[in-house]
Picture 1: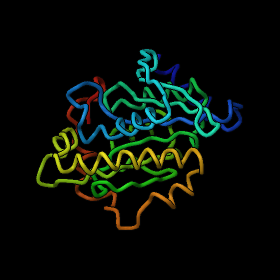
Picture 2: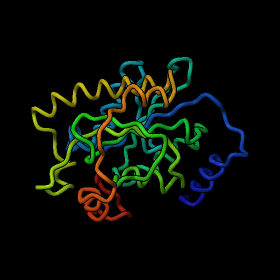
Picture 3: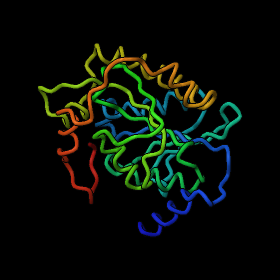
Length: 237
């Protein structure tokens, strides 16, 4: 069944296949369950929910999609909001099924994720790129077999004195939560701008100048190497 799904996804991502135009998909990555609800790793979920509430999108659980999904018209475009209900490192399975079902091109897919390599509250929009050590993005790239899709990264800071797994799966501190509440709203503004004005304009408005840690930094290497649950069962990090 997984091989069949992969073949479907590959067909939809071929340039010579005609698919429906005008459908834009936002995907907020996170982990399901109350345990992880307010964790740093779930900030992608929070942005997807903020965006959905603004536009009266009701996210419904769709078991066959392994996601919560809602659809609405935003800025004259059909927009599909998705929250994978797999664990983080199996997010790609849910995303692949959703993009194949709705016929979404890579350029019309926006993946929203946390980023330990950005300072707390910093937003970074990119049109494409590597996974940067993020296992959710890594899974999406693996399943879609492309890195050419936009992503919105949200800085959650980093703490080299703690295990990275414990850090990202932990809740925001009280003072951080105050910051993140505002950042989630601003990130939802950025999603609106991407849909209404396009990626370049949104990047000009929401990307802030400053040095980003390189992808070979200690935090990124630890994230790549540290796996708390095997690929077969999936895991929250």
